Image (cartoon, rainbow, N blue to C red):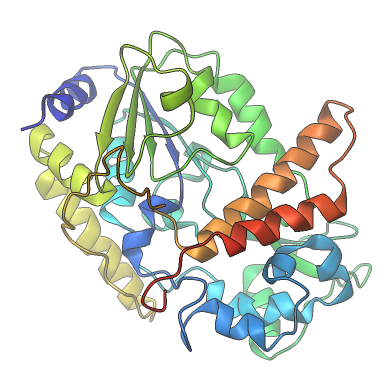
Length: 354
């Protein structure tokens, strides 16, 4: 067994240990979430018929104000509830049950951490999520059932107070990140953790990408990913542990070492039954995918699907705008933002129709 895994397991097994997770799209790719460009089934096939000026316009707040129908056309398909969380999601939940989870910071909007049972106060969705809906003008809330019924009927949810458009609380291009992200990190960044586990992210989206660099020097940082990235490459620490492996496989191995395997399986089965009872058709996550190692002399591949790349790119640029506003710096010009987004999509390597 890998000595790095054994060390991580030993730390997690100690009384009073605390771990913080920083996760991205790579922990959800085994869940079967549709990618961006698969013919007929991918979200891009829907985008083509919407005649968008550029694909990410569907997540642009200015475009949303002009043509909200584009986003609502995709909203029902994107809405959480169709997919079973991955083994890694349930491993985070298991850390909660073992009282070692301090916080989980996620770039994902799929809410699968919450679906797996991680408590809301322990999850920080840096780029927002579908957990709430608010008017883009007066910020009045709308309950999920009302919002979903309106969208399902082909309507455009409007605020009963001011008649502005209502959208989920995901961060659109041109919007600020949630205050919760900044507030809790101000609180958490001063704490000492035993482990900071970074998983399934390229650490290319700011300000999220800065978080692993800000944890205490006494904290052991762990990267579970298909490639080294961010501060692990730019400012590596002697105590860093790099596991170039699949997130779900790693979760399975850690559970085995910790003696948590049976409990992990029970959580997964209970979660699947709960979704079945609720009438949700789920695509089962891959149970034990093979380990993937990327060598430095090979072509690197992102662990994120094209849709998730687009979401991260859009949210990242929105974050830069928010940071610029926060620091009283000039905001990024619109034409520059569109150029960066377009380049991001053009650089996505599509193979076998994915």
